[in-house]
Image (cartoon, rainbow, N blue to C red; front, side, top):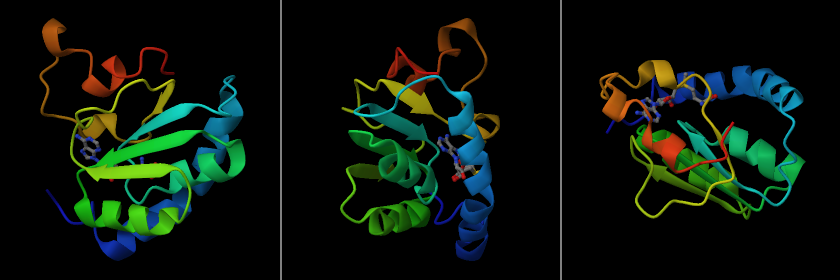
Length: 132
Ligand SMILES: C[S@@+](CC[C@H](N)C(=O)[O-])C[C@H]1O[C@@H](n2cnc3c(N)ncnc32)[C@H](O)[C@@H]1O
């Protein structure tokens, strides 16, 4: 496990820079996220799920990322929002039943699964049958 993806300062700057992209992502989807269980694969410091909790009233948000220090930040920044974060490089055991899944700027980093037919569906996707 790494501490931060890049560094504490770089990960914080990335979160700030990605805010407008997350807004654009929300503008393109046709799903009402209110009351939904949402997964964010590669959540870094958790900013996207905080946006969904604050703006879209999701029921629960689940984010994971191998950058353990960034996940610590995500937990601290979550406050009393209904958000959970884990430091791992795949969907944690027991995290199921997602209605929507997001993963922004992460798939190109997932080099551990060879693109064979048997492994072509990432675990996060199988955990989110209705994901977009
Ligand atoms: C470019 S950043 C994007 C972070 C976040 N999704 C965003 O929109 O700001 C890529 C993130 O993917 C994470 N990552 C790398 N390998 C991963 C994996 N196998 N599963 C989930 N996340 C991974 C990195 O730690 C990093 O936080």
